[in-house]
Image (cartoon, rainbow, N blue to C red; front, side, top):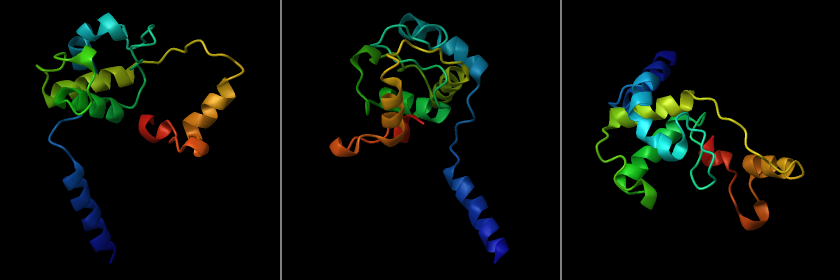
Length: 136
């Protein structure tokens, strides 16, 4: 019985593994150079309309890059930015930004506790999901 479980796990992992190798942060740093115009060189944007990418989950960042490139996530400012990138390039950029340390932003100290509660648990009354459900 144990052998069956082990074989099932191995088979499942093969099915779930993609053809893209793990992201290479060093390669991603070079590819992400144009991103610095909006997101800053290390992914710590100072403008509220450009999200901070530094320190986010590599898996999450890769999914967003794939969705932006495919058009599944429409962001007019990103139009054409990823057209020349292949899957490995996207994985490398995701690895680079994930490897960076996110810097803090200014927050109203009176709202930090509420923000943490929403991030972790959402807002039940308005059926708003927890932020961490998507953003890790």
